[in-house]
Image 1 (cartoon, rainbow, N blue to C red):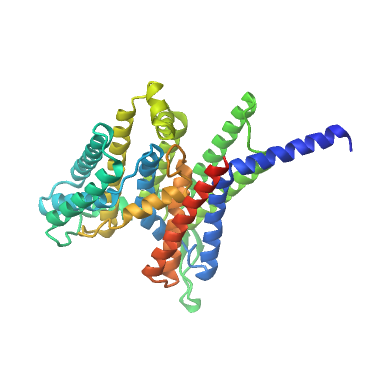
Image 2 (image 1 turned 90 degrees about the vertical axis):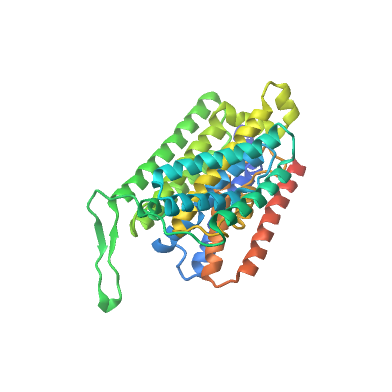
Length: 412
């Protein structure tokens, strides 16, 4: 073997090692999610990946994922929002009163509630950005205020049910204009149920998979063109094969039940939007600069107060949307709606790789973190683990995630 070949191999090994070290958290999170899903799939005797349970998993965690997108920006900017759970309950209560008691059309109600939620976020953002009151204090006060207002509006009672059209926001599925593909006929003799694939949902899933792989390869080509490639070819191919297999399997399982839930489409659209905003827009880069070093960001010409204000306004808007989805899923508004949601949302963002000191975090990480929490909740519930022990386990997972963040920050 020539010295040139040995040198190239050593260089490739060093490059691979450097890439793994710099991206260990991102790949570690994805690997953790896969391991957790496989673990609960085995422990629950295959119940976790059943189409019905998978659909319930999406419906149960959609509002957490949606709020995690807003919370990511808040935490990246160097702040925290403890009020999101109370805002969810308050917006659900307002929607219930408008639709059930005053018979306001559900579309008008939804618009009014989203405007109100954005105003709540803007109000808290004003105190934080312009009056320089710590976000912990402002949002803690907001948590108490909006929890109390929800209780006052509902008079301590549950209000419902909602119009069927409004319920479709959370419980509806994408219509199937194409013929179904029957893969199993009902047979009571062998206890077999009829299984028919929702062709249109499966087709949408395949198209989305193809688009994701296409954009990944396009980005790879751009990186090669400008000499900025860091990810080894083997990692890139393996990652895309894993993504394609996961998307296709996911689409197949959902198509074999009722198809794609409406809320999944909303959630996916928001994930794509916020991934684009954080990675490819000026305002996204400025939020990271704000969280990394606020003084330096201000000196470089960034209007940090306005950016903080907009970040909290966005958080309020997403919390309002989550409140509508949660209310539609329950088909009623209760005084305890949203209780503890802020803990799951914050935990999802930190588990997903965001730094407690700001400036670090990715959308895909927050989504993975949310699903890690969701799969753990779902799997432990199926196994009959009590809510007390579930809280202990989730707390330990959150502590471990923050410890890992601190460890790698010290090493860097």
